Image 1: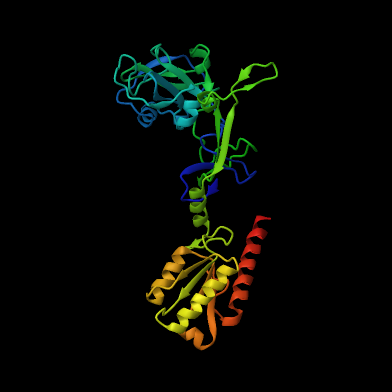
Image 2: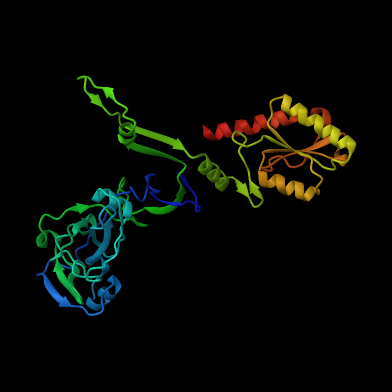
Length: 367
């Protein structure tokens, strides 16, 4: 993962110990205060309280003492799964799918005889519904939850006391300022990141499809468990652009740049300039240097703007004005070298020297 504001994923990071994980995998560690002590289960009328906010205002309880119901359905048969979670937290859909062991989608309540929208609770819930409790509710003595009846809630609800063998799972999203699963400090920060590489655990899906088997130590046929990993080339390029660019375009590291040298011939209609640029182009290629050659009949500003946009590390400019001084202009895209005039006869060696310098810098960073 590359941390960048342009990333498509959310990453939980602990600046204290260095822990990091995708929020879809990061476990949620919570401390429940239990300011409200255990009480008898009591159904109370709560008109117009179909949201956690409205419920908290009506009963004057904090969201941390409510059990919010989040409804999903299995993709295979649309049967309902209701996950109960602390009212101030949100469900992580990936975690929930893993806990349920199936593909799921957000639920749509079309039959109020099964679920009562806005007032769903675990006590007396329809037996057709799969119920899961997030770990955030564990050990909370006093909760408010739906009563499966319009405009009614239960107060004093206690999961362990009022439900038979409740199943606790971790399906919550980790939050900013949350407890780090590694060092235990309240230091978690949520940052954006680009997934550059990934691992796929394929199991036996493809080995079975290909009827690919081997004989184990007992001479019995088995399907190999498969897996694969890789780095996304497109994602890697995007990531590098995010960390290595300026206002005019990318600044490619020399080790992965599409070309090492961008050769610009200004005034290609000038015979001497064109001949020297052609000669230099051939010499660079013969030396094994990757070079893109721009000899278009365009204004210098347009040519240099395009060169910036391509982001090639080394730029060599051949022009009638430079040749009048028996020199070419050499610069680097990262501005370490800015418009250095180099004698024509020394240009090839100078380019080679700069390429080596930029390469050494990259390897030094890697170390």
